[in-house]
Image 1 (tube, rainbow, N blue to C red):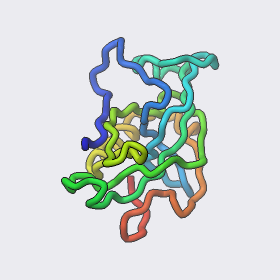
Image 2: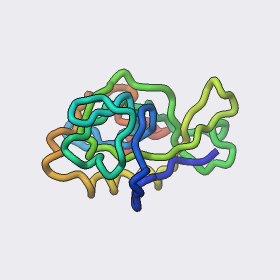
Image 3: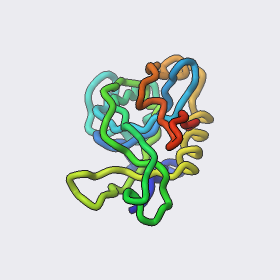
Image 4: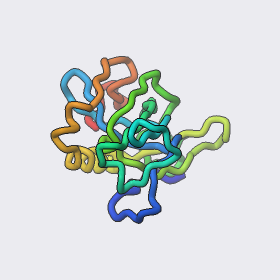
Length: 168
């Protein structure tokens, strides 16, 4: 079982974002920004649906990404027998939205599960913190007004095992 990895950094022209691919983005809740892990529902260039968007084009004004958030919970030893990961995905949130491509960061994840019918992703807090820092550093002021707002719920912001909201 392998944790999430950022696919950014050096890009080739062949690197692209596809539908159903996992991403990280930023979402606002009660005036605070949080890292949000999601899956891509649809991709658009100039408001036209496309199968993929080259990574090099994501930050351009013409790129938009529709996504649905992943519910994240603290991982247990039965989720990750190596004990390397402290978060795991658990289904999807109802909340979905469309944002400029500049607000998303593709990640490359391996599916983790002992049962193929119950697949999930595993994450390490240090990787999530690094992804949050990369996103915050790369979001231009013009895109800040496009960051979606979400209401607090029992499942968001993501919560630590002690029930306190996570700071990612």
